[in-house]
Amino acid sequence: MPRPVKWRRVESIPENKYFAPCPKGKCACLEGIQEVQLKIEELEAMRLKDIEGLTQEECAGRMQISRQTFQNIIDEARKKVATALIENRAITVGGGHYTKNVCNFKCSSCGNETMITFEERGRVCKHCGSNEVVCNRKQCNTECER
Image 1 (cartoon, one colour):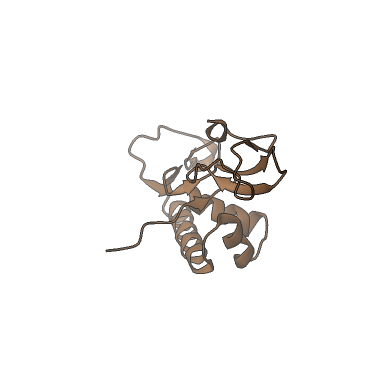
Image 2 (cartoon, rainbow, N blue to C red):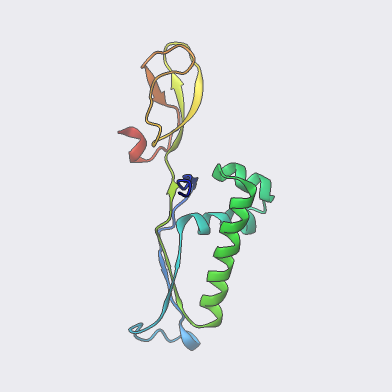
């Protein structure tokens, strides 16, 4: 029985999730065009490595996965993008096994700060046991506020 897939942490999800070829600047009807599905974590891997210029180890740390898993993800992402470009396919972005809900929580009682994911959901201070734990990030997404 295989191990369960570990959540991959992503920092940004794109607004545009569909990219299609536009031959000679004339976007025609996209009916019947083949698509390539790029997972959210694959796009994040490319953003960290190719745009931010981080090392593989830094990227893996930011996504909270192993270096080998990061390498597998980015290899698959680059293959999909190259296929789309070479074979005139559209790219759809979505799906995968990821979380964006990692927040820096601060305990109002003792002042201790800790990183917690939404999936952990335990909003009890690991230092003093208080349940007066609040998100300490100014731009926190709605999942964290629940």
